[in-house]
Length: 575
View 1 (cartoon, rainbow, N blue to C red):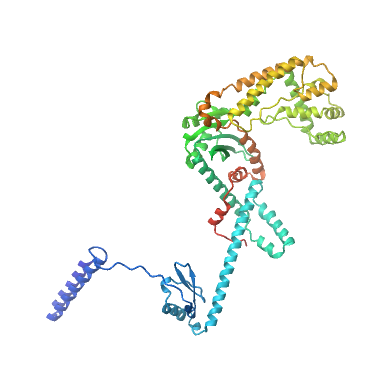
View 2: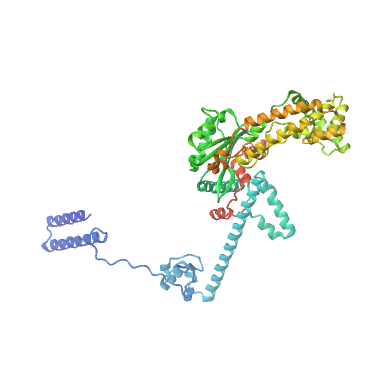
């Protein structure tokens, strides 16, 4: 830049000389160029291109407010460290550097020239109005914060009860307004009406709380030395395959269980697709596969396949993990084997139940008959293959209502099952595999096998006290049970062999790695039981619902940090 200036000045000198400029003019131009040269050199030094002798900039002084500044129409706001002048007329804020009488007076004369001659009382009145406005704004902001927090609390209850998001605005808010109006008055009802509870607002709040719970859960998992999970899949009302995963981890020396995620599969329910969903979530969350010590599933082929099954892929990434076959599933498989004579009784009992329960008219008539006969129950139970329900419960209910069932079938002209079949109706006690560690359930299985041995010995002595319903039937009728003893003993022996087959692993040699064996799940009971909540959430009327956020809020044991979420939100009062 300095070369261009010099060149321009020299060109001007040459032009002047070419047009006959005198000697005095040339000398003047030369001194100008020399002066510019010194100016350019000084500018360079001031920019840091060379050594500078300029003194360092002084720190700006913080000016304080004086009560006399009110005569210029200014009060003070801000903090004690940096007070700011504020005009009581237009409420404009000026910088701290402007807190000078001359600058304040200049603002009054230029911005409000018609008010510059007003008395001090007028400015004091303006100051009181400004103060009142600030209080009003602060009050409304406080009320809006409370409304926002109330909106979050109501949204949490809606999600935990599995209700539609529209119920908040359509039912809860009008009901709350009616209650407040009747009990406290119209003013309180108007405040209740400021709570934002629209459909979209409730959905956003549920999503915020679900994300907060997930964030807390992932933080707990990161601090846990090991973790294990159980998973199961189901098909929802929209025909989508949903993968539900629960996780167990260590927190403060205790084991905690919580829902990890619920995701739908994009296409086929294969082992590769399930693994892609699971691995994608683990990778996105930043969880290490090396800390995984257990995975519990049922024995579906695409989950437990040796080559491309889900378990095989997980064990490849988590070498210390152990696969656990769901004990409820094992129990169900072990109890399926029974003698042909007992199985025929079960089939006939199922046919009876289906005849009464499958037709609404028969179900109503049977219920009326039970009421007239003073029965303890009024309905039979449907037979189901669900793993956590015992077939014995259906048979036990049928035995309790045997007189009512017989009377109903006689009235309906149906051939009645001979009475001897009712003597065979009995249930087998189940092993409670819903909760507990692998050692505890292993001991329960061993105790149940020992109980089967005891039952067999008692059967050989014609003692049936361990079967209460069977014993009551024998005592009431006085029948000869000798022909049935061998059949029941055969069933008990077969049941014992099946339990030994499915529960043959001995865990006593793994005491040195107790934590890795105590942590894994022993069954998929949590997933199985929570599918009922999933079904209640995603109905045919809400088949497009993205259910993961609602399900997390409904099932998680972690409380959302509502106060923290409110601080991150911009308050908007409902219109």
